[in-house]
Image (cartoon, rainbow, N blue to C red; front, side, top):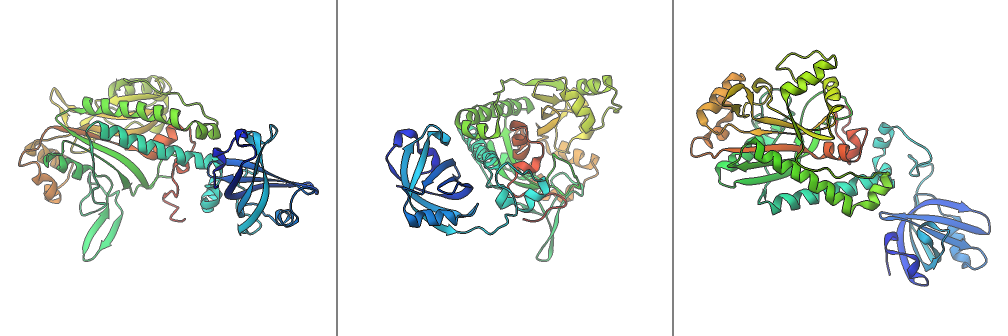
Amino acid sequence: MRKYTSEISPNDDGADVTLFGWIHEIRDLGGLIFVILRDREGFAQVTLPKKVTKKEVFVTAKKLKRESVVRIDGIVRAEPKAPNGFEIIPKYIEILNEALTPLPLEVTEKVPAELDTRLDHRFMDLRRPKIQAIFRIRHQVLQSIRDFLSSNGFVEVNTPKIVSTATEGGTELFPLSYFDKEAFLNQSPQLYKQVLMAAGFERVFEIGPIFRAEEHDTTRHLNEVISIDIEMSFTDHKGVMEILEKLICKVYKDVNEKCQKYLEWLGLALEVPNAPFDRITYNEALEIARSKGERIEWGEDLSTSALRLIGSELDDFYFIVDWPTDAKPFYAMPNPENPKICNSFDLMHSWIELASGAQRIHKYEVLISSLKSKGLSPDSFGFYLEAFRYGMPPHSGWGLGVERLLMAMLNLKNIREASLFPRDRHRLIP
């Protein structure tokens, strides 16, 4: 019976099993061979004493090379000294595909490699249990997000990724040839999810790729990422902030309960946050940075160095609210009592921005005025603006980066670790 290594225990002593996987390590002591088999769930020790192992099986074991793919039929034997308390005594070994030598990358943790080398040979890097753990946890994160939003009345949607108009204006777009027209890769589903508010969906979410043609070269930026976006009618920015912090708590709770094995592979003990998160205003954040020697004028974005100083004073998760209107996109709703600031927020984890959101302008005339104030032409936003002329409800929303969330959750040093095949300004393959 075929089993994963995680499905076997010392209680299966004497049972027949079939395992498939990769040869992780080999120790040949002459008359005794130890083979460590690795599958996606863990490891199993295969023990071959020459005196009691079939000759053809022992000969096959002598020819095994690390990272070759094999099938092993054998008997489980309880053995306290073996990993997980059991070993496999093989009756049959089949080499399904032999690995070439030397290996392009060390899969055990014995020989460290630079990140660029690992990404160049990503298929090998992904065989490492610690790296597998990141993406098993990522799977749970996405599943938890879908479950949470669906249970709160949100409808999952998919919006176009090839568009004719910039979401927020500006030039940070990847152009492409679209027959005889100019087109771009979408930098956000923002315009479409707002249009869906006019269509009466009330609550929508999307999990999908976004593309930013920003020439960053940092440990927290990629040019293609997966974004979780929501839009919600009949609420303000505070309403969607509550959804966001509850979602974060739910995701952490689920990962802590369902991914203990993978957290152990990473050597992590996950602390589940509690809502509500702290909220500080842009002005308060500015004062913290200035008090620590950072020079920033009011209205400027907060620099990385400023965010590090601010993050050092606050809990892991916190919101920065009431941003200057000029610093946010055209669709952010100005505060009616002080139009110089808007009903917007950023969700922070220490110094890293995880999500950004706002209450949206839902009045046509106000939206036209905001576009023009940002130097944008309303003519470029025709399909979008039409939705505001025939009954657009008040609405708010946010976008949350999956890779940044994983980076924060798993204490990753580089965002590229959270992407299977990352895309940055230098990397287009693999």
